[in-house]
Length: 236
Image (tube, rainbow, N blue to C red; front, side):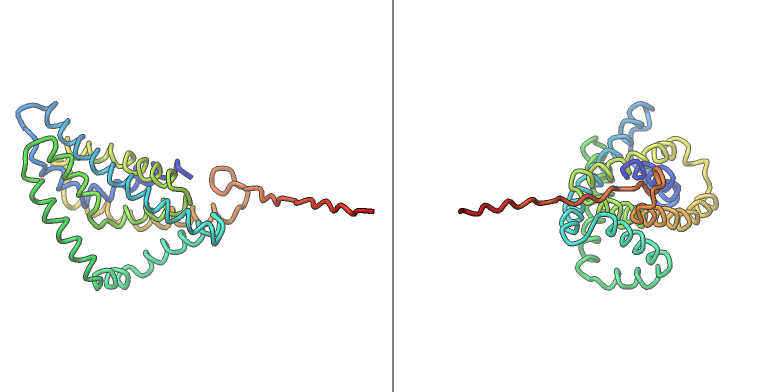
């Protein structure tokens, strides 16, 4: 299960190229030294990954509580089905999310703080900017968070999101080095791949929950039942 988090981040980072690439390019890192510029962008991404891991911990706890009411396999099927619905009904979901005024106000405050930190030229500001960036709305992150819930464990959820963030790291660093050579047209084309990729991951979650006995894809999980032996003592 956890290995899929890195794959989601690695392949899904094509979405990051189109959405977050311009932010990475605009990060005010020192231009005089390539090492300082690279270090600043790396610290920025470490802050982003830390936020992902923390949110994964919280949602892992939530998923763990759900396993008290249903099995982890059923939870995986439900999460995969919800991901498919998000692809089929994106406009409706987006409209409902925009109607949540408290969430909209919170996002606005995060963007304000992000803009303030983004203009500073210190390593601590880069790190804080990355942490705030991890809180901004992102469809790819939502998909990964659904996977964190499906792990049904607090620490597994944390590691799931950390691996997801590490999966996005190569592309984000590559963008910071050569992003100026990637045109807006290419970024737009790459972004269109994301829905197809999301459908693939959603189907993977559903297959995993169906317990079909397919190695790595849908491994069989033996269901064991505990037998309780009750000994009755009769006095004569």
